[in-house]
Length: 308
Image (cartoon, rainbow, N blue to C red):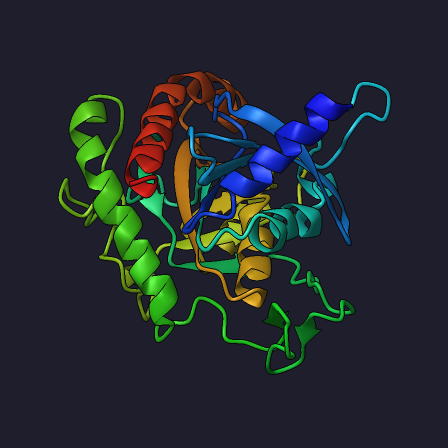
C-alpha cells in the first residue's frame, strides 16, 4: 500500500543518518520497539524495530525476529538452535548499516562464587562447544583474508582480538555509557570477583585478559536443553558463563568487521552448581522476572547514550 511504501521511504531516509547502532536482546529483555519493519537478506528475513525517534538505534529480539509466520507477518518463537543468525546479523550490519552491536545475553554461571547469580558482566572472549562453521561464506561480498572490492567482510580473522582497537574501544565506550546505571540497580545485582562499581559491567577492565583468571569467557553451548552436570564440569575449565546464542552472533559480527559487545546477565548457577531447591532451570525461571528491571535500565541507558 502507499502508506506502507511511504513509511519504508521515511525509514530509509532516517536510517541514512550516521551513526547507527544495533541492540540484540532475548530472554528476559522486555523491550517494545517502534515502527517494525521486515528486512529481506540473502540468508532469510528478519524483523527489526527502532528504539529512538531518529531510527538510529535498531533493535532485534533474537528469538522473535527470524521465524516469521507467513499468514500474520509476525515473528514466532525460535529456540537457540533455530535462530537464523546469518539473517539477523546481516540485517543489522549490512542492510541497516549498524556500526556497532550490543548484545544482551541470559547466562548461567559456571563459577557461582566468583560470578554470582544476579551479576552482570561484559564478556571478553568466547568458547564454542561445537565450533561449527557459522559464516557468510559463499556471498560475493565476503572474501577470504580480505574483504573484496565493495565487499563487507572476510572469513579468516583472529576472534576476540586484543589488538583490534575498534572492538576494545567499543567495549570501553559501552562500559562508560552503562557504569552510571549501577547506582540505580545496585540493590538488584551482585558484583563478580574483582568487579567494582567503577568497572561495572566490565570485570577486569575493557581490555581482554590473557588467562582464565583475568578474563570473562562466554561458553556457547548448543541448546536447546540445559547442559548436563558432566558438561558443566568440563566447561568450568574454559569459561565463566554459559549461553546458547551469543558466540554465533559474535563470530558473524567479527566476520563483517563490526564490533560486538556482549553483556551477560547471570540468571542461574549451572546444572550441578545451583543451590536453588528446585535446581538450575527453576532458578533461571525465577530470576528471569527479577532481572527484567535491570535489563530495562541497561537498554534505556544504551539508547540515551548511543543516540546522542
